[in-house]
Length: 298
Image (cartoon, rainbow, N blue to C red; front, top):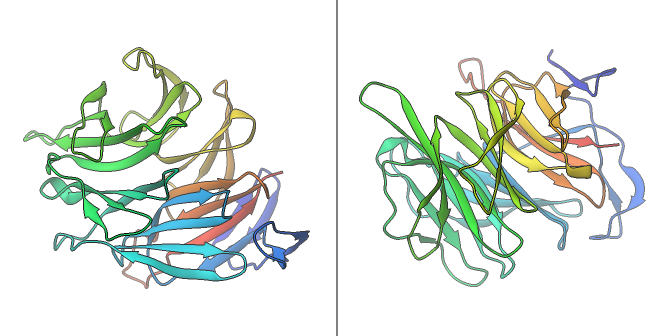
């Protein structure tokens, strides 16, 4: 039976169902679950996004090529199906919610059909036109002033990866603003900076938005994945090795939790100080167990 370590001292079995907090949630009259808790899901959650205004978690379900949501009061619910994907699968990455209610999500495309889909608050999903389909897109972020940035890489004939961060527009432009990367996965806007996780380099990078090419190494992390902003300027990221890391604003890195299969998306709820973690089963030969974790952040 797999074990999940929270922080550095407490060990809990991964199937433990934590008791709900007695603090009433702002989104419903019942209790708010802070965890530790594991929520089984019919799907494979990848990118996660917490909307604090509506107290709703949005999930990019890769197995279903769809957007789901979760609330304390209602549990999981279907939001919208996405346009047909390639036979290899949708490869959904990070999703974001803009101020006007539009949901935007990247699709990996496996080197032939990479794209970005947006779902207006009232309307049907649309594919952003004109983007290079060979770019394997994963990360996505939206700044406080509404600008979008995504991460992507291409695989060369030699097998090497070359990646970049682009400034994305829904009209179909994607100029590169950070180059010289290998396999950028996560990109996150924090204040006046962009934070990038490069899985091949094993680095978390920090770049000023005013001069993104002048990036520096913030931290070194083994196989970092998607990113989420946490409390006090910290950053959370998972890894293919099953660890969840917390990185301080100054770059100090610690294992926040361990024992996962593969951490994909992460999202932080600042009102209730809890973290949502998408745990991907990378070995389906002995059954499939994709789950969503809720962990308290104290």
